[in-house]
Figure: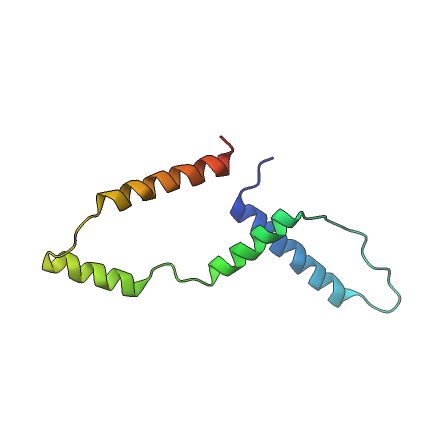
Length: 100
């Protein structure tokens, strides 16, 4: 089964939530649960990144406002080399992500 980035973060959240609930339900001399999951360092790093990304806004309003003003006034200029650099960077990231 393939687990993508968002699914991996959800799995970690669910597991941590079940641990927290289990700790709250322990009573008296009940034995600790024996469920265990070993998450690789890469998985932990990925989860940490995903939680950090959730804190960022979906839209950078200041950038959008500036671009709107430039487009409206006719001063917005496209830099072809930046477009190409971005496309090549995205291609490389995609190749690294899928392992090809």
